[in-house]
Image (cartoon, rainbow, N blue to C red; front, side):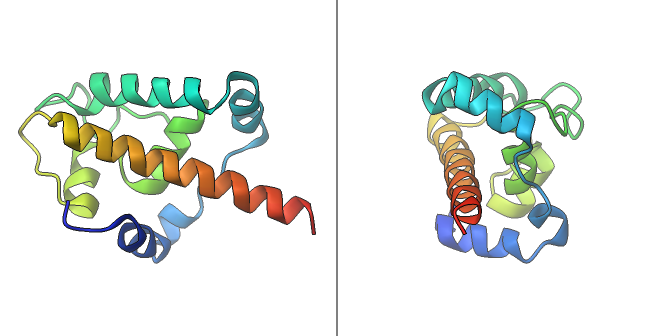
Length: 126
């Protein structure tokens, strides 16, 4: 976790695959209806259940591609599986995530959602 969030986002922005993810209308409506605090509680739960174990069930396929703002953010930020966490965030596979690592993942997701929401808001006001 040597990378600062700005460095991580700069690297992610160079990936055409990661760059293509955006919150759709359905995910935006869900975010608006539930609020960011609820969405971040969901993120914490998803991280604990789907990423934190040393050997997550269905690793590499555990995160859907749509249906929840956190899922979209996970793919956009490469926090969707242990392989991506290892490659992009230098969090080793094969060991349970520490609470600090889980907090880091949640922070990356939160930052992406906030940036995506602000970018969309500023686009709409042009």
